[in-house]
Image (tube, rainbow, N blue to C red):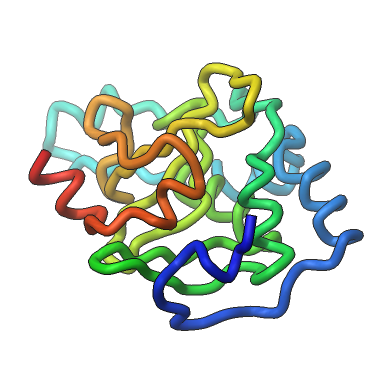
Length: 185
C-alpha cells in the first residue's frame, strides 16, 4: 500500500511513527483501563437532569471499571499509514479525515466513552465536524479490515451510526462527506 496515494489532498502530515512507537501502541491501546483512567472517567460524571426533573432521582452513573476494550489487532493498512504520518489531516473530494496518531486513539476512545455507548467500536479519526470514523470490532475478521461506521460525537450508538466503508483504504479513497453519508443515506 502506498500511503501517500490514499488521499487526494494532504492538509497536515506529521512525521511517521517509529517501529518501537508502533509496537508500544499496538500493545497498549487495548489494555484494560488503569485505576487512574477509571477514577478520571468516574469523576467527570454528573447528573444531567435538574433536581425538579423526575429523571434526576433515577439517574445512575455508569461504571467504567466494567468496560472491556476490543482484543483485536488494528488494521495493517492503518498501521502502515501511521508509519507514513502519525496522525494528520487529509481529504479526497468532499471527504475530510483527521486521523488520530498513536498517542491519541486510546485517549479519544475513553474521552468519548466508546466502551459505554458503542462497545466494540474504536474511533480512529474525525471529520472536522464532530463525526467519528469508527472501526466496528464487534466481530473478528480474518483479513483485519473491519467495517467503518460514522457517528456524531454527541449521539454515539450503533442504532444511529451509518456504514461508510469496508476498509481503511476504501474510507481514504471515498469522496462523499461523512455528514452526507450519515444524514442523507
